Length: 291
Image 1: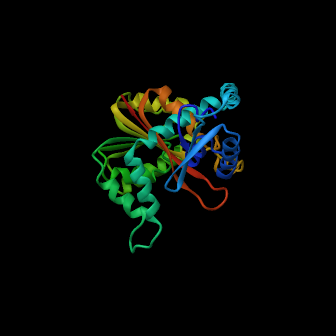
Image 2: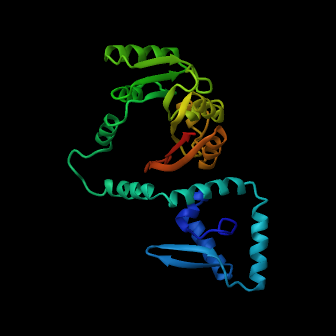
Image 3: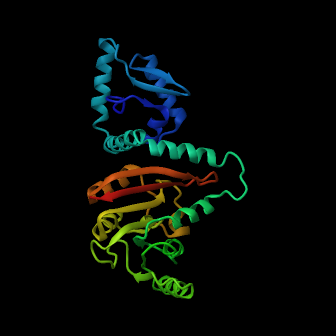
């Protein structure tokens, strides 16, 4: 009810905000509409809901009480952050177009057509940037970026991995790829010296994710960008033991808050991949620009 206070939202948008099941949301919306608190309209295959503009005095009182009560719930703050993100995404036609393209991609087989091939193409048309790959591991992504980047600085906290990555880069003749020993919260990189910071499946290993994002902001040049690939919040506890993860992914609202608090503008966050097999990990892509 509080989310619909000033907006008209679809079931899918409410699901993206709350991370509740679609059937659960639809059931509650139906009950609220039956009680005269909501009204709906159809647009193609989607149904949009909003507060009942023609509610009688009793219904109006219930609406007011429900919204007042919602603001006292612990989830209210994160829901409002997620609502802001969803509305911003709705207005970005480029994102809508990408979703349509991505939705078509796997529907029919095309010989030689793959995400791997697309990735190789996109890497080669990137401008020559100075890139920091924080939490790089052995440097697979760093190596790919080095094919086009002006310089890539790969940072990891394992001496063994740094040594392995540096030897491999030397063997492959990648003179613009440098490995440095350090951690995400305090990377050994000069302030205002890189164009792009990448944290690819690394943030959930950080002791303080918010501090890692703040450090990324410091090392970026004005106008530089951060891109984070990580897991959406999940409940697969074995990830601590199996993968050494400190965090079981992150809610989108937390990611948005940390980026905003660090000073980033033009923040974008969306789910870009979902695994069909248990435990059904979902990957989020989060980005922002340093003003």
